[in-house]
Image 1 (tube, rainbow, N blue to C red):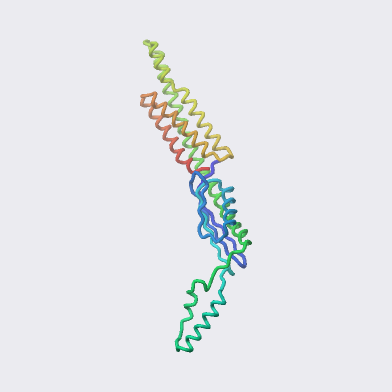
Image 2: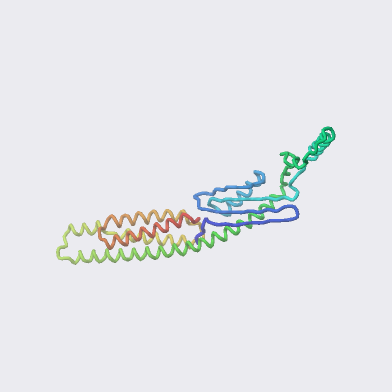
Length: 267
């Protein structure tokens, strides 16, 4: 079966001390690429999450957003606060001023975030797993949709091959039955022979069908096979000036191109 590289998922974890929200997006890419945003975790924790996602998603451009709201995360710098309050009272008493205490909170190091404990790592991973499951489910559904299109294009391409073979056979039969069949015409027929190209192209399409039905990830393999189909189609076109054969050979190339466009989005 085909698996798409496109997917989206969200994960949520909450307990008495922390709230974790994860958003995961997956797009086409030749390799596994992870882009993280709003990350409050250590390098070690990020590495574990990266390894998990690579094992699960295999390939694609992955955008991961992790938002952590810890209910005990803010820490008050009490020593500095008490020192500043004491100074404020001295100023008010000696100079008769009425100071605005709200400005205290604008001090950059009055409030700071506590380092998240290692126990948070497992909670974040739970949310990441939930989001990953959704991405995998969406990838699978998208893959089934692509698979249907694949089979439609292959069906049309095989009909084109049958038409080419039929038209070619009639042309050969006509020349063979001609009263003026000469050795030069026989040589000409041999040069125009597209039987091997037709057989190889049919075989290539059968390999694609097997790859589609396989449990293995087949995107790169199918991409290679499509290059071979394109090469065979060009050979058929170069051998014949017959407009009927050319019409079906061009259609054959078009179906292969449609497959190529789709294959860039599968694993």
